[in-house]
Image (cartoon, rainbow, N blue to C red; front, side, top):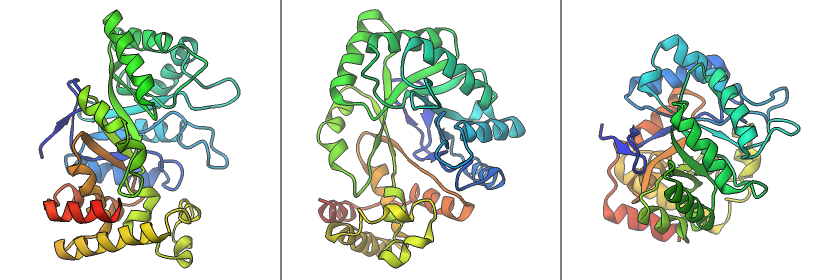
Length: 316
């Protein structure tokens, strides 16, 4: 399997990342271990999580996903084979959020403890923090890289303006720079990334990973009307926004390409992302090994130029 490099770093990843947002939420520890085992067994290595996953589930406090991944890596003894991404900045409790030096110093140690490791391969600012100067954030990241606790840094959900400023600061101080942008991008949600971020990241050799790669499951094709919303307790109530003329047009195109390629809509949607210039790896979640297999199949699906144009037109 051909690996891709994240930005200008030395992190080589297979062209599919496994989202850890479901671990400790809609996938318990046993189910999570099964998915992680199957993912690694196929030669994939990029696992993405965040300290806040999955604080939104009643009874959770955040850190559940990191804890499960940490237990799994410890049990399997495979830490060196994994490219591990986690994020900092989202609210973990009263006063526990943001990108200040003081908070990141505490948060990174908590993540390392939950993950049962002494280093994070790719550490991301989860959201912009307008209350903290970008230089302060990059300064603590530089210290963490120097100390060996973080290998590479990046960001999630940042604007072109903020990333441009960050690259300038990193160059000025000879600090590590953002090598990765993780952004909301899929066949339905295109404009936010393609308007400015895509060109900027390609010009500056920033590797891009996409989240919500299947539009919260809509692009799998299992939600085609309100009667289907009960198919997922986690995502069913989010489907209204996709069930419109454009959404149904996209599903029709996915169906057509999937039929021609003897595949499934989810596989085609992920393959479309893999084929996009600048995308290092789409990130997608799976709560079962069966769901994961569709994602893995996508990495072996070579879409033709005609397939891609058909999908582009349907989702324009």
